[in-house]
Image (cartoon, rainbow, N blue to C red):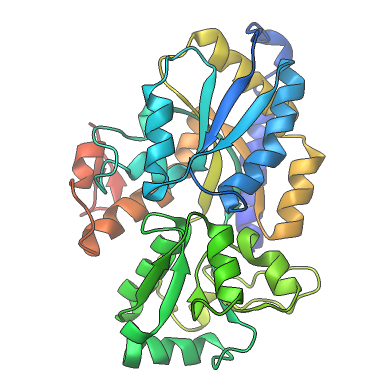
Length: 344
């Protein structure tokens, strides 16, 4: 992963920690379990990091944080369930922030945007292009040539159009001008396993969903969607996509836990403090990131929103370019002509 990116993310988390103390805001005392809805299947990137983070929060709050998988419609079904619940602080969701911020653009959740959520980011993830171990493709250049010449024959396993894998292959197709045949699964983990089993010719899901399959020799990683190689213990460095597509636009894909706006202020204050003190210093979360090829990047509030906007803008505007947008990004305050955020 890009060392400069790691430094920027670490500095952002450190600054946040300096400005917040658990002792000033430990006001909310939940009296029953909290439901944390993961709108994807078990084993995927969101599910993985959420199950690492939930026990940290449960210990700090003194109640169970129950992770519930509710997949469907590229995460929109579970996310809508959270939005429909009473805003009492007892129902949260987890996802890639680019999804929650752009569901309105893709028409999956109308009239929603990033500011419908209190944002708590934990890690940044990167997609990896991988093929089965016995694939005819031995490097990304060969796969790219096949996509350009016989694209509709090349099956790509993802967790859906708006999943990290779905947007990754769409971005690659935009950049290199090719077609492909997407096969969708209930999560990134199942998509990676299906590829390893030969159900698909390639996958573009996140590194964290593929790492064990790559280490175990069941998947062969061809490229990472980054401008730097991805280093994983026990695996040869995975070359950056810019070796083949040097001008491709890239942005870190942030994952975390989100609480709907409208919950009591003491809920937000308490979670802010716990995130800055407990999550930002969690050895379990650090170990997870280092083991599975993610970037440890806890942040919350305004800082988290600032870090998230580049990937939100990229995904919103790319959906327009791909013809997938149902609503113009201007409706959520994004000007695609200048690739900037504007007033809503």
